Amino acid sequence: MSNKQEQPPQGVPYLSLQREYKELRDEWMQAIDGAGASGAFILGPNVRAFEEEAAAYVGAKHAIAVASGTDALVLSLRALGIGPGDEVITTPFTFFATAEAVSLVGATPIFADVEINSFNIDPVSVEKCITDKTRAILPVHIFGNPADMTRLNALARDHDLHVIEDAAQAFGAEHKSQRAGSMSDCGCFSFYPTKVLGCYGDGGLITTSSDEVKARLIQLRNHGATKPFIHVEVGYNSRLDEIQAALLRIKLRAIEKSITARRQVASWYDEELSKLDLVTPISTANNRHAYNLYTIRHSRRDALRDQLNTCKIGNSQCYPAPLHLQEIYAHLGYKAGDLPVVEGLCHETLSLPIFPDLSREQVAYVCEQVAKI
Image 1 (cartoon, helix red, strand yellow):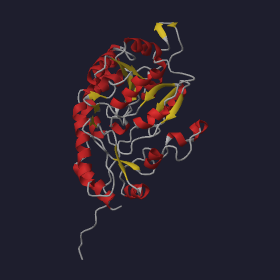
Image 2 (cartoon, helix red, strand yellow):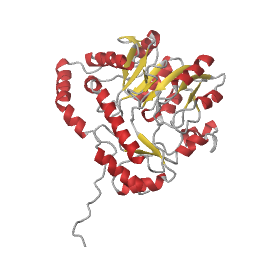
Image 3 (cartoon, one colour):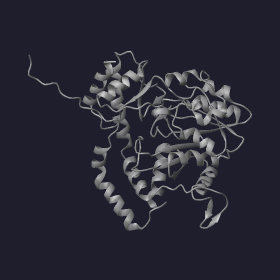
Image 4 (cartoon, one colour):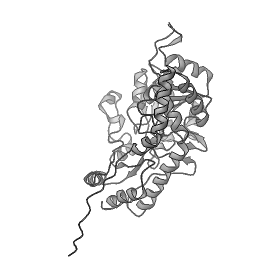
């Protein structure tokens, strides 16, 4: 009998920002000190510089920094004149904020089904949802994989609709060499710490190439003011602070390195999981997936999750309940079976750990446990 003791499960976090923080700490502390010494804390020089740098990176004419990704969606809808009586077609396979923003401006979210392989909103289903009340299409680049913007923009042109990209999970992702946030009237980003480009708090950004939309957004984010103490509409207090903008500028300079690392981790997963009876994320030739999340499909998702939890491997059910069947939208009249693809995905999808500093050994350990199911 061997005297070698079995090693306890090593565990793998779903997300860890500790190594990143250690690497950025000196620059981050200098940025805090610089902001404090300048006396500019809200919408100061770092915010303006970040807006210019982010717009250039995304490939849009303008970028407007706001307080969160949710605010980015709400302000974009308001800036495009969408409100009560209007319908906005979106996906039910997303974080609640996407549909919530539509409701917050008084419009009605209309849910289209999604594509089973990409998890993104299905243009065929979108077309079936268009009515004379439809004002906009709001695709989500889910998990960092861009939606089919070519087909969605064609639909929008044919029906004279606005398009707003929810790119909260897709900073740096690309569709046909165009970056997320540059292919629509407005692109909306979240800088929540878990995102591809995240700050150390809440933050958001709107990109647009319309001078008119930019002017309205600047007005809306600052209480509807055209100049100090002069207000022409009811707006919002949605302003990015200097310290977060300074950090985002630091991290933006390394964003390509970060995305490359995420894509490397995803390729390790693809290789390790290719022999198993599960479905790994699709990555087509038209898209550059940014892998904010690495989400698999498996018919025994719950058993798989139990196994990972037992081994202290972080994971997430994104998303366990489609928005069209949640209580908050019961008044819209959707019933089980109306959107079969997304309803199936909600029972089969599971997101595995992915972040730039995840090691190959950690990926191998995760896949070893997945293989047991």
